[in-house]
Image 1 (cartoon, rainbow, N blue to C red):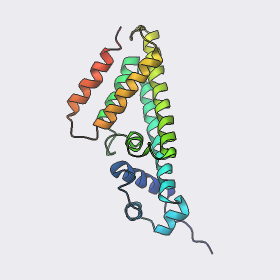
Image 2 (image 1 turned 60 degrees about the horizontal axis):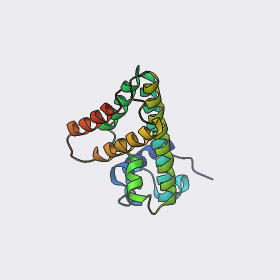
Image 3 (image 1 turned 90 degrees about the horizontal axis):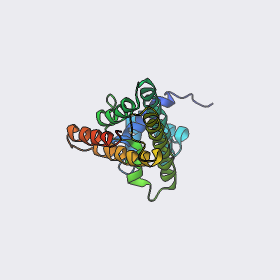
Image 4 (image 1 turned 30 degrees about the horizontal axis):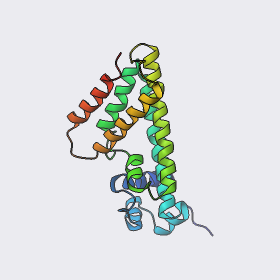
Length: 192
C-alpha cells in the first residue's frame, strides 16, 4: 500500500528554490536539499526526480512567484516612469527576506553556457522581461514622458542589460546608493 505524502509539495519546492537561489546549483548537494526541504531522500526523488529536474521546477516556481508582483506593481503605477522606478527599486531593495539578486540571472551566469535547459529558461525569462520594459517604454513614449528618438525595443534591450546588471550587483556588498544612482541615470536617459 502506498504511503501518502507527508508534506505540501509547493512548500518544499519553495525551500529548494530558496536554497538554489542562495547557493547556486553546483554548490547545493542532494544532502543539502533533503535537510533544507525537510523530506526524505526517497520522497524527493519520487516527487521531484533528480537534482536537475528539481532545479528546473525551482526555476519555474521562481518565475511564477516573481512575475505576479512585478506585473502588479507595474499595473498600479500611474505613469511609465513610476512603473520603471518600481522595477528598479524592487530589484535593489529585494522582496522581504528573499535572497538578494535573481535566481534566473544567477543560474544563467552559472550554467547557461553548458546546460541547454537553463539556457532556454533564462532566454525565455529575459525575453519576457524585455517585453515588459518595451511596454513600459511605449507607454512613456505615448504619454510624452520618454524620448521617442530611439526605438522602444532597442531601449528595452538596453534597460534590460542595466536591470540584469543591477540584479547581479545586488548580490554583492556594493552600497545600495550606487545601485540607485545607476537606476536613476538610466531613467534620465529616457527623459524627453
